[in-house]
Length: 316
Image 1: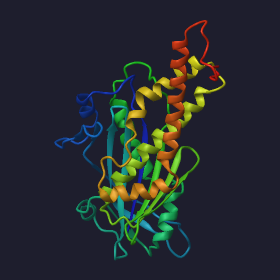
Image 2: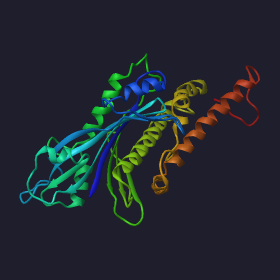
Image 3: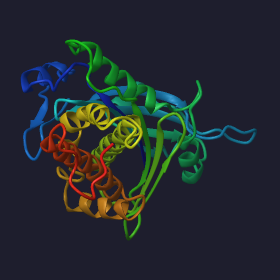
Image 4: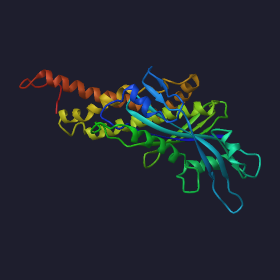
């Protein structure tokens, strides 16, 4: 068995964080189903899950065989801190144990399960899913994008967004088998990331929640890197550099809490991920750089016009 998924993460439309009541409205996607919401350790809300039918190729087609998947994928959306919206889709892929397709009633009775038709090799399915899909193959990214777009369209907007950032995509492949957790993370072109997870021993819903948390923190780190780059520290005048960093201070820095909502198993996965590439090490370095700029700016302001900077402190 494999668990496959994709998460799209971006900034929620609007000038400021949406309040709890608005968050509930934005994530009310399934009639009669409650939105899951929590305030600690950080404001977080997640919609109920929708089921999306799947009937497409899963692996490389060849003259001797072609792997087909039929079933349903789970689709949901989440908002963190009133600022960040995520669209997520995932499914467990299992062998059907037969050669023929059954009526849809069979697949609807097994939510979140995609059954393979054809001789299945899991390594080929994983490799195929990691590549960009075409019109004939499984595209959970499109499913994730649709629910994220739905929330964005419903958001009121309320003026120009203070922070501009690109949406990132995290495509993930999980093999629950294995004695020890193993993680491989890579950054691709066009804001795509690939995450391979092995040996979790977790149910699919918990694996998906972990991958959504990774996607959130990858987006935060990616956005902060871009903001620091655009601030042109050491090139622009310090006041202008600080002005460009203010959105990071207001919208991003307080959201960094990897693994805060997870279980002990999630903590072990984060520990494996932090060894390499080391999200938190890079985040802390960027945050210290921003705070250093604030400190120097404050010292300069206290010195006042005509007083200059303290001895040994060069101020641009």
